[in-house]
Every structure is written in C-alpha cells, then in structure tokens.
Amino acid sequence: MLARMEDISPQEGQRRVQAGALLVDVREPNEFEEVHAEGATLIPLSEFEARFSELPKDRELVMICRSGARSARAGEYLKAQGYSQVVNLAGGTLAWANEGLPTGTGLEVRQ
Image 1 (cartoon, rainbow, N blue to C red):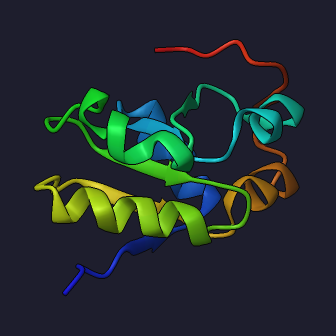
Image 2: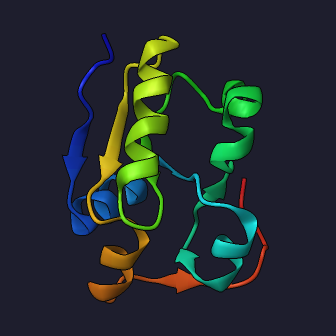
C-alpha cells in the first residue's frame, strides 16, 4: 500500500524551496527544456528507479511534473523507499507558471 501524497499549492511549493526544500522535476528532458520551475532538478520518470538514490533523504523534496500526476507517482515511490519528507506540487509546472512564479528554459540544471 503506497502512502498518500500530500499536495501543496505552487505558492507553498515555492515557499518550501526558498526554505531549503529540493524541487524535483520528473518530466522528460524535452518537456523540461521547454519550460520548468526555476531551480528544479531534473530526474526523468523514465530514469527514476535507477536514479532516485541521488536524492537526499535528509531534505524535504517537492515533486513536480506537468500537471501533478507523474510527480505524485514518483513521490509515492520515494515514500515506499523510505523517504519521509516528500510532497507533490498540485497542478505541476502548468500551475506554477500560471501563478507567475519564476520559470526557466533549456537544460541547464541546478544541483
């Protein structure tokens, strides 16, 4: 049984990232390149099971995708792997951009 993901608003997501949470985008590189939430780290869902261990367990993770579905699945997977501080950004990158929060383009990725 997978743990239910807590959904947070784009504004709350930005507040948590500013407070030190890591924003993890699970879309594919071509989607990320088009537009992404500023400061997001890209780990595509297609590579997620192989790469999730790159994510810190001692820091809150805010999961994001296009609309919130893939990031919820990735977050539930992380919870099943023992990550405790994981939340999902409701509405994903679409909602983030619609709220006028900072976005970037291209594949430059911050770690």
